[in-house]
Image 1 (cartoon, helix red, strand yellow):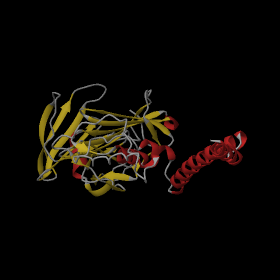
Image 2: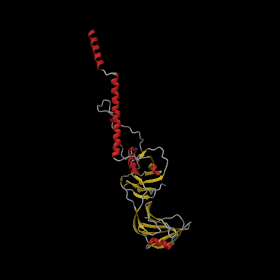
Image 3: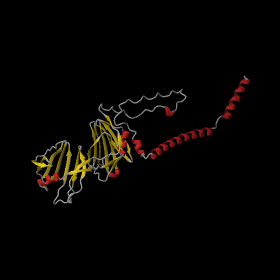
Image 4: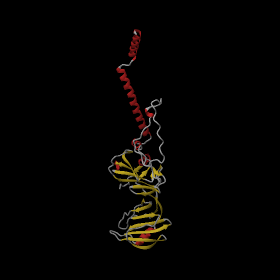
Length: 348
């Protein structure tokens, strides 16, 4: 027993001599903690530097991490099983992550995916009037698929504003008027006179060709004969429709439907995407950023709406995607980042 006691005592003294001191043990823990902290900071800075190198606002990258506007039609791949405690390769970074986002509803059966392409080409108005000292150059717009040209009168004594609209179907009117037939450009047209103050409204409409109707609207500054003469003087032209924004991206397969001083709408048989500049609205519960601006993304049965608080303009840029179309949140944010407001825009 004495030899065994001495052997145990010697082993304990040897172990005590090699054990780290309290100060050394605490220093080792602090060094390990500092290494982990530096690694996290370095990772974050590397991510930010990569974003800046690509020229993408950091806030935009954060904003693109929301759930899709409409859920993908394919089910997501199942998550990999969590590693067991006995797995030699198990590490915190290899553990599966559980998303806290609520599941989104599946898209309607008729929902169509939208692809964004570079640039946008403005539609054109196909006619013009002869240049006149008392009239400004035409300003073209589009509403409900119909190109429109507005000729503003600069001399109100001898001239009046003129609006010319081209459509694919016969115009319809809801107001009562006096009507008379007129020969215009080789066709039989209809001149409508609405008796209102301060001036009677004159509208001459006719079918120019198969699938094309034209209407010319002005007031009784002109006589009926002069209105017909104005219509007869129309010549072919290509006047670009002036948009309120420039677009870096355009939804492919959707035609421009409405282009005014405050909105651009794109449409196909499945649905619409509308970009509208509104007078500033107070945005509550913002969900991210588009560039430097706070934004709110919402989803409902009608589709998705991304509202951007454009403080520089004291306005709210609102982009809506109807339920018949599929655009991910990341793509919707990317589209919004490429909308640039022009000075001629006028919030509604």
